[in-house]
Picture (cartoon, rainbow, N blue to C red):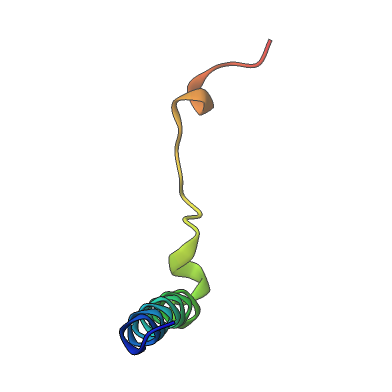
Length: 50
């Protein structure tokens, strides 16, 4: 592989790892109560059970 090929490969792998780590850190830094809404209301909740 040429030097340009190695540079391209290393830059793309570094970018992918950076994006992956950034996404994981964003998810883990959120508080648990912000991730799941406890007061969700969906249309099927209005239907009566028969």
